[in-house]
Amino acid sequence: MSASTSASASTAVERAALWLDSLRRRYPLLLEELAPGTGRTFREVRGGGPAASAVAPVRLYVSDALRDIGDGVVELEEAVRDRLGLRRIAAAPVQVRLRRLAELLDAVRDMPDLAAHVEEETRRMSRRCARALGDPEQLVRLPGRCPACGSVSLRALPERGVAMCVNPPCRHVLDEEEETA
Image (cartoon, rainbow, N blue to C red; front, side, top):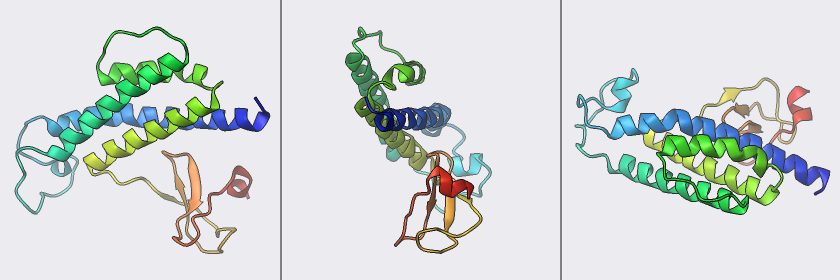
């Protein structure tokens, strides 16, 4: 394996660890959102004002997100274990499976294609969870101008571990040298 391939696999594993952590923190909130409760919306519970319309008794988008994420975590854990040559393991709740996946990330570092797959799937599931919760992706404004287009649209996306220009025609992703300059 070349040095650049090893570095990209290492980066993918680090990003996958960020997405797994985000998913581990948000998934219980998704379960709370589905559970019947006080009749208050998630927005109200998190400090926002009341919703403009009546709250639907069943939020199918939350149920669909839970099913999609649960199925995705099971399939991802089975695929990673199979690729690493590990035996099948007992069924467990999503939170336990997420922890077990995080523990396998060091072994995945040696397989660039698997590392990229794990990163992509964990990112997809984490974003699905965030969308169901109504959480926008956090953006942090960076000082300076984009080296590609010159606009003042530089933003950091901490969950992705990326700094980029959010100017729609540009979308330049900064490398580490450009971030520190």
